[in-house]
Length: 191
Image 1 (cartoon, helix red, strand yellow):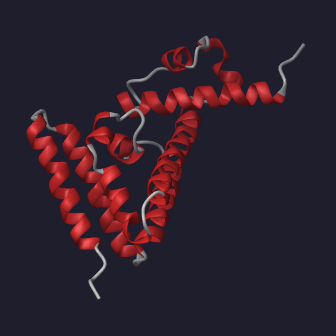
Image 2: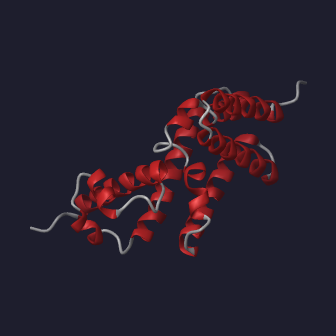
Image 3: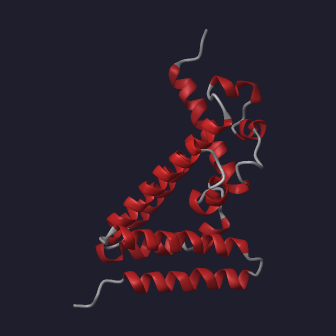
């Protein structure tokens, strides 16, 4: 008896989740299809029943990872007061927990360098996902596109730099200094 469409969709979702975590933790090139399938609790022989190529999976993993990030940060914003929504997102993004959990975190600092050298198809999907994040930030910030781009680039760069240094104290300082600077720059003027 063939598998149901729902079963096949659930399996595909497990593969995408496994890939999304593995790519963010180790990079795209360092992760093989057998590793991804093993992470999903499957054998690698079934991969091509769900995807035409690893490249197709990378594109879907990018979408899934950004959706997860926007959902998580949206939840953080919802729990904050109107005037604190953006500050709460900045605090959450520039946190030690985010820095220390690349496999669960934002795809931009984890993979931007590698994606810059990827195919046009992957870069196109990544561009769409960056635009999604920029729209999310713009909606919170109530500011123009340029300010949202600068805010996002600072957040992404801060996490990337904080993850890259091997001095825990310096890493913490990078996060706290950038968090304080961004919150000060985006604070509403006192009436």
